[in-house]
Length: 628
Ligand code: SF4
Image (cartoon, rainbow, N blue to C red; front, side):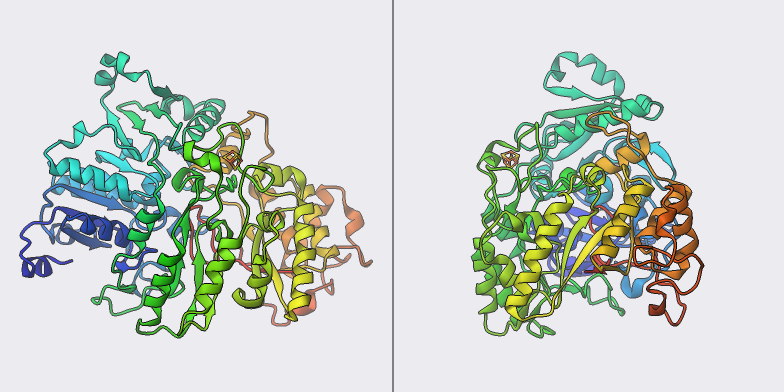
């Protein structure tokens, strides 16, 4: 809302002003919209400054001074993940800006905070969003190749709201409204605050419920201490039994309160049924590229219990799945049918993992098991997909809905542990020829490092998928996401994967090369060379070896010939160089299997560099496509 719009409504001063690195899009997939609508719903007036020009004062002064606080976020994605390719090349466009324009500074949350603090030194600053949330402890920063302090130590902010922050933000706003000062609000679940070192030391007795993890000085100089600190704060990310985590920094003490309680179904329903326009602000003349793929999609749930090592969702949304009611989702779908531009296609119904909707564990009401990860093998987890089958059937019956697609990734191991008709319905109605799954690798050592199901689960799923496709009379393909360069993965492991692709006549179009994004277990391995949970050494491919690994995933691409050859020689697997059917590459550069595919000679080995897609919290993209 602009100051003029506000004055037309009789608002002279906003309660809260949100500043975001994204263009403003009033859609529940966009953080500023969901947070803004939640605060508005709680009775607060709200101004939003989207993508301010941080080099000048005008944009930041435009809405005046808020009565309670500034809320600052880099946007839906970490600004460095958003602005750089995994090879650290600067991207030429930003999908969260009108026309893809570049309008976001690097380390946006810090830059905006500095500017706002300089202009309004007395107004509290509350950080939120992925960038702040996943940089809340001292962390390895791939872009500077260094360990950085918690973002709360680097920015002149008072607090971070981490994770999905609606309830925490509402609580903080209400307490400020009642007259508490921001320095007095120390205990809201889902927040992180800071304390002066001298004051912290004076309050020793008050710290008994906290867990003290190695501080910045230690983790930035000692890799083992970094790994230990990571494992310690990882174990406290449970909303029921997690304790407050304290990490000393040179000039401040960082205190993470336990995570916010998961939202109940009625709370989620209320949030997602707020009156979103599902459109960009009318002032934009050009389209926001990130909006189009999600405009007619529906979020059905939050949370993911997969705990994949390279994904930071455990640190952001948590392991406990929180699902909306079927009725609420049906109401949202019905609303979509009345919206301008809706052509009968719901492009996605899902969450972090599509087929976790409504799955649950009876123990979650008291928290997740601290000593093991949730998985399809756990006998206590309810893996019945029947409610999802019911939801999808009822969505298909809504007048005006022609197709309902599932575009979010699915966990194939959960489908294998379930006997409902979910896979049949998925193949029959909800995928357009391709089903995305994410085995990521097939070598046991690598899948263990990634916390991914082993190869035999993938094999069993492929067979079941093919049988279902045959029965439904549809020609369908699996799109498996595969990853190279992950910690724990050697050139030999990549050769094993390449042989698997060869033996199963698989074809890989694009390569996901591991990127160490903030606060994942894989990033802790990448930086320290240790498994943070066992402290055992882990092989970390870097530099030339990482490039070879990526090439092996696309061994048929002629442009990769020299890299693949070098990898095979390195692993003493020259038996795979030659002219027999088993060979991955021929003895000479030209005429090897698969080279005929690329008659134009144009590169198809783009890695992720040209592949933006819809980024998720771990920085991966949804646009990677490989076909079985
Ligand atoms: S019982 Fe199984 S599914 Fe439930 S919290 Fe424990 S590990 Fe997770």
